[in-house]
Image (cartoon, rainbow, N blue to C red; front, side, top):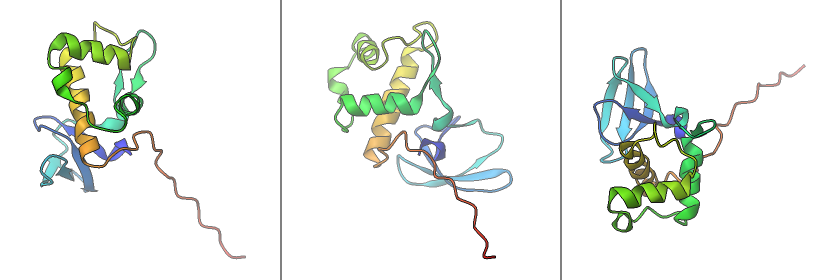
Length: 141
């Protein structure tokens, strides 16, 4: 599910890929539903490709979102209760206790939590759903 959700350098928020051409994507903002062209010169990252550094192996962002969803009972995060940097870091330690404190910055945690809320508010709630693959057609013999 997260493979079609994009982060685009120079653009705030997240985007859903609508269509793809040779050198351009058409993406729809999850913030205001406006469609924009995204060119190959932009840095584009699929949320499905992002992992969070830990003391061991990186943990996929989809798994982090699922843990947050379970903790928040499927609702958006209430930022009024984690309204300062120390509380936000403590919150993230509950989500991923072994995250690498040297490579995961406060700005990353803010981005992850705000992305989670944006996805939930747009009805994107099945974070670990695998993309379905098409089965080959069977010929009639």
